[in-house]
Amino acid sequence: MGNFITNEDGYYSLTQTGSVVMLIMVAALVVLTAFLASRAMAVESDKGKTDTAGSTAAAKKVFSTKQLVVSALGIALAFALSYVRLIPMPWGGSVTLCSMLFITIIGFWYGPVIGLTTALAYGLLEFVQDGASYMLNPMQVFLDYIFAFTALGISGFFNRFRNGLTIGYIAAVLARGVFHTIGGYLYWMDYMPENFPANLAAIYPICYNYSYLLLEAVITIFILSLPPVKKALLRIGRMVQE
Image (cartoon, rainbow, N blue to C red):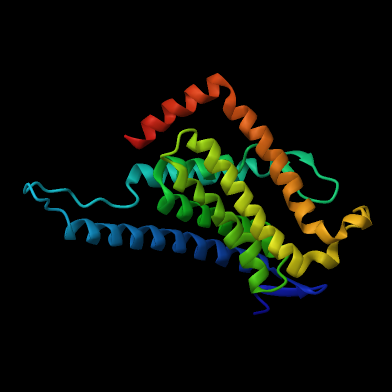
């Protein structure tokens, strides 16, 4: 394990070799998940493809080629924008340039299955890039990266709602914060910064996580409310869902 993981100052981190191996595993997992999901949907479609009128419905894969390309582009944009940090927060964390939007919008366009799968892939990528340097134990990794970032995919459950993108985005951000907060109470209380108000220590994980998540959400929702942005996203949404 020494070639892949090191233990320093009480937490684990990936070595350079470990990071490369993890990236390969992430890519393989994403491909395998998309393939298995597509096969499962195809089998279900085959079972009920003949209706009472005798017409047939073609088996439909969960991920079409276009959906895979759009989802990969969304992950790439989200990952790149996660490094455009607009406002560093005083207790840690940063407000990024709408990085969460480009994951939640995949769910809004394509539904919860593709949305959650895309968000999981994004979470794994974020873990390899950043979280691999701060691993306390497996459950902490799951809460802070696997569960938290996958929660962004729940926007897919709101894709038929009026103003579903905004509602789904808000729900996804709040859900991500829940998992970060649970992880904060379980594993990060001892790392509370000295500049955090002592009288608010009991709600430190809530303040820490939702301070940057909600501020970024406000900025993103403001941008989404601009008429040119609305029109552009509506046009792009029609194109990618054809």
